[in-house]
Length: 301
Ligand code: PAF
Image 1: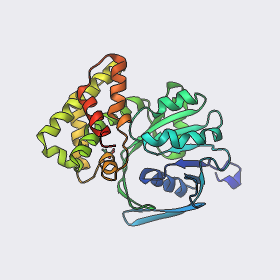
Image 2 (image 1 turned 120 degrees about the vertical axis):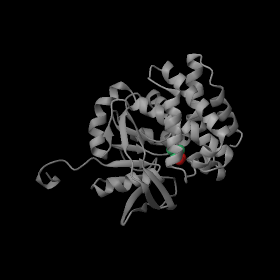
Image 3 (image 1 turned 180 degrees about the vertical axis):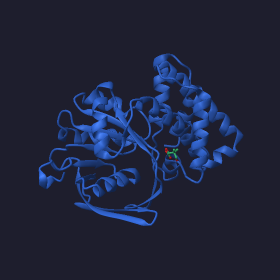
Image 4 (image 1 turned 30 degrees about the vertical axis):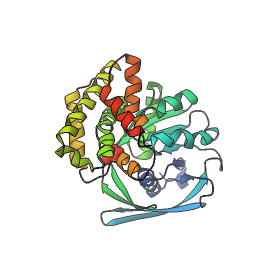
């Protein structure tokens, strides 16, 4: 049924962090007729045109853009900033979010949801993870290198009920076990990202380094121990196989952390291995390899 025949138009979305993944989702939503506004920085232009190459097809759309403090109420928010900059980017936007506003965190790492749920327990916080592979040819031109799956679930059990509805709006898949899946993704990022940053190598190069493989295995076994303490089923060998398979599948990529270090930017390490270290401390578990990765990457900030 169309809006003209009486149904409501789809809810409008705001996107915070229109980099590769944020840009991809902005374009996907716009292509489905959803009204999308980008949250830019103070002084950014009032509009921004993004384009996406997906095989032979090219998608282009011009979006309105506001700073976090300009504009009215935000009805739905997709957050795709890197974890370590999210708090600063999202804080000025919070007054524009009414009670029960759905906020979807689609980013590497864990811990932002804890801060957001504690700061604004009235929001409907959802977390998503994706296996889409997208890179930027330049700031506004994206290339979809590999179409993946994107799954979503509630950051807290109370928010799970809303995941189905929001998944439908976004074209994602609602899953009941998002926390376990996010921990698995965390293990993959904990195993690949800091090592590629330290060796300054592509993901696939780790597989040819016996010492890197040994560290990856130890990192995964520590993550599994923390997952078990969190009440989740986990197997260190299986996590290591998942991390190695991901390094193989993305062999030619530079991980996001390697790219950050090479560009002289700070990294998401506190939300990857740093999160594992924090949770391990709470459970009284030793995670020396994750501590070592955290300390080593922090010296590069
Ligand atoms: O952070 C990244 O770069 C990615 O999550 C991954 C899976 C390591 C591939 O590069």
